[in-house]
Image 1 (cartoon, rainbow, N blue to C red):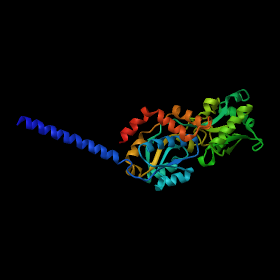
Image 2 (spheres, one colour):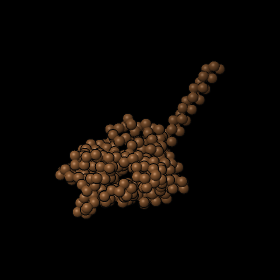
Image 3 (cartoon, one colour):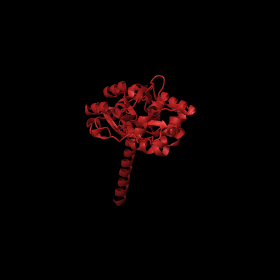
Image 4 (cartoon, helix red, strand yellow):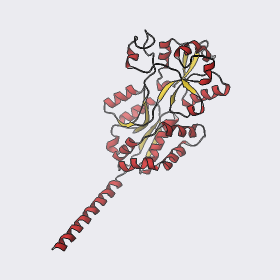
Amino acid sequence: MERRSIWSSAIAAAAIFAGAMLAQTEAAAEVPESKDPIKLVLLDWTGNHLTNHIAGELLSRMGYGVEYVTTAQAPAWQGLGDGSLHVQMEQWLVTQRKVYDELKGAGKIMDLGLLGLQGREAWYYPTYLEKDCPGLPAIDALKKCAGLFQTAETAPKGRLVDFPEEWTPESPQWIDAFGLDLVAIPAGGEGSIIAEIKSAYAREQPVLVMFYEPHWVFSDFEMRAVDLPGWDAACESDPAWGPIADKTMDCYQPNPTIVKVAWSGFAEKWPAAAKLLGAFALSNDEQAPLIKRVDVDGEALEAVAKDWVDKNEAKWKPWVDGSM
């Protein structure tokens, strides 16, 4: 009787174990949960493309179909809101925060968490200009030296190479607030701003640009940010706040919050993919060298993204395991 009891228990335990293994196999077989491709949104800067391609490479290795859709900000938000696009892995929330808040409040998008990048946007100049404009990076010094940056297009005022119009830059408001003799000229894109920096350095000429970190530019060119007061909510609404008594916007915008955003139905349709992308993270130190490999060294972006995945299994494997 005792032997039968032990034997029965062993059979039962084996059956439970086999059932558990079968359940795991069946669960694993459910990925991808849908054969529809996951559409990742590519915006117009290299870091954004890299982040999305690294995520796409991981999704592909899990068995998902992936498509990359290059578009501008406005149609990207529209697509994420109506489900025709699915994921944006690197969304900088500064001037884009309003539309993000509206779509999230309406239940049309979901937040997949912070990406991990620590962003900064500011006006930058080459440090060699400090000998020609004593007092930089102080804003009062820039006010006296604005003429240094004049071009045939802007003379007698100086030129600020601004973000592309699509990025809805706030530089014109800062120029007005501080009474600067500058004209903000929108660049054609990230590459145009980099070209201006390279050209200025080659001739050691003045240049003032709106730019951002993380980026490889700051490892190759010694640039310094103009010193403006840090952001405060009162800066946007109370003229008495800040150094200019009768003006609002006499401060930088807040440092960007960099998030991962998805269509609101994403986690329901592809739950394992949503878990993976929720865990996905990149740091400034990881991304900036990758951008340089593409922009400077001329490597194919897809190859750089795949190489990162090949060499960083110890980092991403827990994300994949956790998603399953």
